[in-house]
Amino acid sequence: MKFNEIRKMAKGMQINTYRMKKTDIIRAIQKAENNIECYGTERIMNCNEDICLWRDDCLSFNEAVKPPA
Image 1 (tube, rainbow, N blue to C red):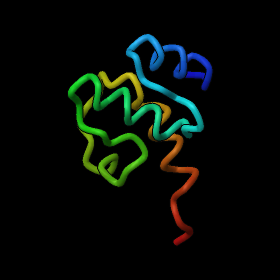
Image 2: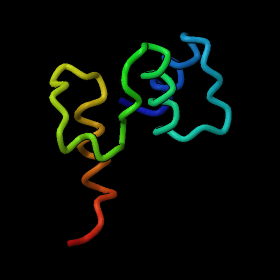
Image 3: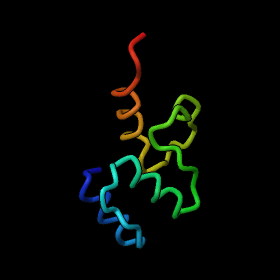
């Protein structure tokens, strides 16, 4: 999902996105929905949330920031 779409979603939930990074906005949305604030965390290694809206993006994000082996 594109950054502006995420911001629009957050604003619709009354979340102030001023100066927030994409990761922080998504976690704020997860918190507002009473979900685990897990986007971009190591939890992806054990994540079974196959229908999560953020799953594909989270997998890509974690792959991009994974430290070299």
